[in-house]
Amino acid sequence: MNDVATALGRLEELAIEVPSWAYGNSGTRFKVFGTPGTPRTVQEKIADAAKVHELTGLAPTVALHIPWDKVDDYAALKGYAAGLGVGLGTINSNTFQDDEYKFGSLTSSSDAVRRRAIDHHFECIDIMHQTGSRDLKVWLADGTNYPGQDDMRGRQDRLAESLQEIYARLGEDQRLVLEYKFFEPAFYHTDVPDWGTSYAQTLALGEKAFVCLDTGHHAPGTNIEFIVMQLLRLGKLGSFDFNSRFYADDDLIVGAADPFQLFRIMHEVIRGGGFGSVPGKESGVALMLDQCHNLEEKIPGQIRSVLNVQEMTARALLIDTAALAEAQRTGDVLAANAVFNDAFYTDVRPVLAEWRESRGLPADPLAAFKASGYQKQINEDRVGGQQAGWGA
Ligand code: PSV
Ligand code: MN
Image 1 (tube, rainbow, N blue to C red):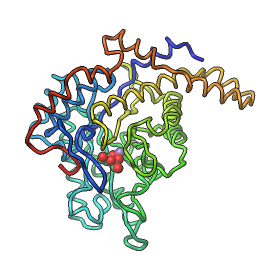
Image 2: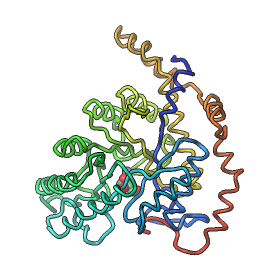
Image 3: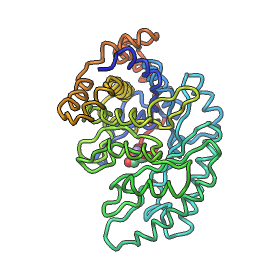
Image 4: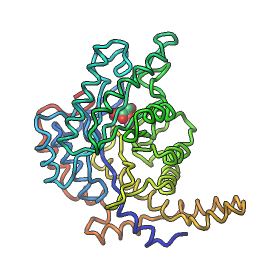
């Protein structure tokens, strides 16, 4: 195995972006439960996110969703976040909640609807200029429910045209990441269902366009790390939306359902040069969470999530790549597999606790959160108003 100290040295490069919507209420189509202390404003969501960063040192930026996180003054919001020690990250567009988008947004056959959807992305880009965000993340709910409902080819062509207009608006240092999802809310066909479609569309756009891989957006049994490898190989992996799934797009805590899968993904990220940014060497791949905490407490849920990513990254950094390459070269199947498993089965929690303490962070961030009294405080303070949540 690799030397623990050397492996952990690279952990400094780990940064995970947290989603503003993880702090709001969420649920299923059956019920959204309200919880005490839930943020009513984007400022309160950012304050919660800042707490996660303060206790873990892992989550320096917060992704915003527009219009959920709309404010009048984004420069002021950026200043507010900076005052709490975090930055504003990816701007997520939203063309899935307006009545006008019932039959599609960027793919719509109606010029007026497409114009509205493109203009919404222009607004997001304007916001990015004010927040200093690098990435515009586009996920489309576009698709159909029945064979013959619409012309799939025509929709794909219109999507290409719409994306082209949006892409042309990007500033020099801005990027567009196109997320795919195999189904939901559409059930027969989805306009951006897989990495191949996202790759084809972003390749046509140019070098500032990339694919976003949401780990919950694949059919069961899909080898996600293969897709990670391929996109890195092609230079088109822009970002991750991390979460766990058991059945569909469950949006559960990353690493909860299958830590081994997260380990294998992180191995390919490291192998493919997608890990870490140090000054002068930006990998470009953004590690984001896209999760909802329906039952568990939200802030501890986010702390658990970033710690899971850190743990599996540390284990992946432990893989003895020289021994692995040698076993692969000599066709020693079991030895190669053992190199992988040795790293995966290493309990890194004690060394990570030390790693945190050596940086002035709590050894146990979850216990520190419990002891901090923060939850009690926000439960008392955040009374009245409208709790943030889906559609809020
Ligand atoms: C769609 O399921 C998605 O993964 C997209 O990233 C959306 O922006 C997000 O969920 C909303 O939670
Ligand atoms: Mn997502």
